[in-house]
Image (tube, rainbow, N blue to C red; front, top):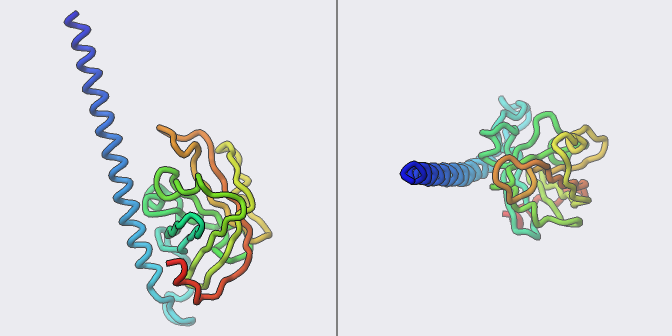
Amino acid sequence: MFRRRRIGRLLSYLLIAGGAFLLYRGGRDWVESRLGQSGAARELEVPVPPPGAPGASKPLRLGATVAKLSIPRLGTDLYVVEGVDAADLRRGPGHMPGSALPGAEGNCVVAGHRDTHFRVLKDIRKGDDIVLETRAGLFLYRVKSTEIVSPRNTASIAPSSDAVLHLITCYPFYYLGSAPKRFIVEADLAGALDASLATGHS
């Protein structure tokens, strides 16, 4: 009886410790995502150097702000950073290095965490507008399809001759631990928007 009580008490302590750890991690991720988004927003406001100026044609550094991603129907504004490492994705959705930049021909790939920035994708649907605002302009993409795939399915990150956007996150959205599948949003470039509309997505 005494041994059983000790085991029960030990299990209680372990459950409390596990809960506290999960709470700490969740709180840390939430704070880092908020701070990361705030910093990324400020960085996007810094003007681009004029052509020929030092640094005007430098490639994107990892962690740099690439674009503001808006989904008007869902009231969502997110800042996309360069890179898909753990540290980058804590700051915001990450543009996959080597994939096309917003508005350019090719496959623009953006990945994000399902439990922070890309949780909103659970409500996205075919026909939704996605606006990517960069220093080069505003680019409108329209959702063509959504799909749930195995992590081994890499079609969404393959090069493309068309101007497309793929948003990638883990699935299911509400899942404890490492999610077993991937949720893919595919959107086609519908065209560039007038820069004066930028304030409408702030």
